[in-house]
Length: 157
Image (cartoon, rainbow, N blue to C red; front, side):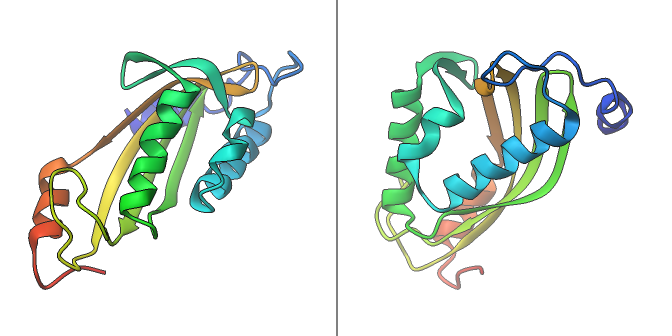
C-alpha cells in the first residue's frame, strides 16, 4: 500500500482549500503540519480551521465538538500527549500519516490508573480533506501495546 500511495503523490488535484481552490501537494502538507502544530500545542480552540463542522471519526458520524471532546479528555489525562510525524503521504484529497505518540498519563486513561509509566506507540491516521478541512478522520494504534506500556511499572520514555 505504501508504494501505491507514494506513486500517487504526484496526482494531487482533487482537494480544495477553504476558498474552493485546488490544494497543491505542498499546500496539503503545510495544512497538515499546521494542524499537528496546533494539536501538539493543545490549542483546540483553533481546530475549526482544520476540522469540518460535521465529520466522521473512525467511520462514525461526528461533529467537530464531539472530536474535540475526545481530544480534550485525552490531554486532560495525558497533559504531555505529543504526536511526532514520521511519514506523510497524499493521494488526491486523502492524507496518510505515520506518527509516534508519547505521553505519561496523570489520571485514569483508557481504563488504566496512572502508574507513572510513559508510553510510546505508533499511530496510523488517514484523513480526507474537503474545502480545506478534514471531513473524514481515522486513527489506528496498537491498544494492547499501549495498555502493556501503561501497566509496566518500569515505564517507557
